[in-house]
Image 1 (cartoon, rainbow, N blue to C red):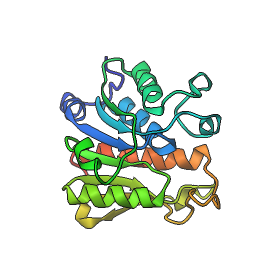
Image 2: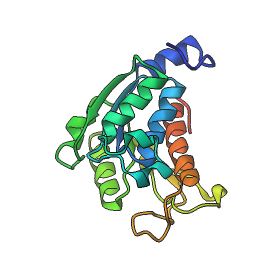
Image 3: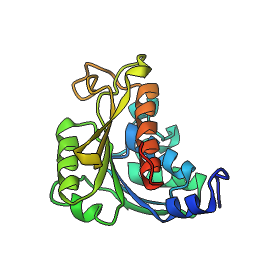
Length: 201
């Protein structure tokens, strides 16, 4: 099944063969995965240890009848409603410094999609040490100020960071809302697509 008729055969092949890892299946990860699948990516490795809660529904790609479900399982079902023949490797457990390299070792690009700044730093540090390209986000809480969200190229082009780099959601000072979280998730997906197709994001 091909849901994106706007790709050339060559582009479709590149995106279809690529393997993208997503660490976290919340507001960033679930929406980034959705954008990637709609764009032509067919092979994903997704890891998250959490369950869907009512409070997740304001910004995450889940539905009311999935409250209580494991996030990776619910997300897998939702993604397969878009493209049934996806190749999904789902890990229903936390990503740690000890297991990250093995979990995302076969991925061409790894997307960081955590809430915790410590977890973000751990994943970025671990993946860069493994020679992976990482697309991450920081500063996406609150609402308004859409033009403040931007993309930074770092680590010699092996790390791309989306966000405003200020309004984090971890402390509760900047509350997570769907529009800005969604913009950041779309920026992550957009960056992945550009990199896979050999373009500068």
